[in-house]
Length: 150
Ligand code: ACO
Image (cartoon, rainbow, N blue to C red):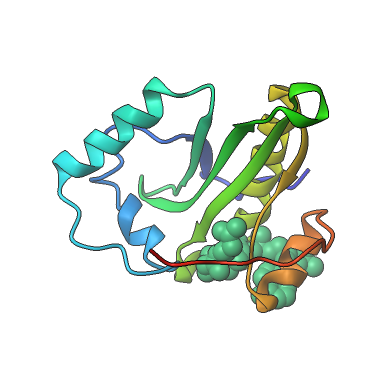
């Protein structure tokens, strides 16, 4: 298990993380849009009401800023004897904080949640350049992603 650097902590997303720069961290992934506090709270409360399915974790720096984030979504299937599959989504570490094993720590925590929740596997999609990172996190290559944009 990777330890967090001194002064850093990992915890579930909180309703005042909007002010701690949560959305700025997500901007390393893609376009975020101009999300208001009300929009953030609406989504936050939805996730909280479904906290048996959605787990979003954040890493907080010693300066009380969000510097990393990640989500696991637990899908309920019929196959595999009504099995559960964990989907890891939106892993993001602030550009200035990359390379400190924060990403690895987020993945370890999400894998733990997936296993504790009863998932028989945890899967994710990533770019080719991120394959070495996920291999270091214990994942192996399977299948190919397909996408259709609405
Ligand atoms: N290529 C090769 N090795 C890598 C890479 C890479 N792109 N990224 C990390 N690693 C290695 C590190 O060197 C380290 O190896 P070591 O243990 O031998 O020292 C190990 O992986 C762990 O690295 P961390 O320090 O934990 O990585 P970091 O905190 O920088 O987080 C992340 C990695 C999440 C990919 C970060 O760089 C990031 O936010 N990138 C931009 C957004 C992104 O691409 N997110 C993933 C999208 S896919 C998804 O969300 C499912």
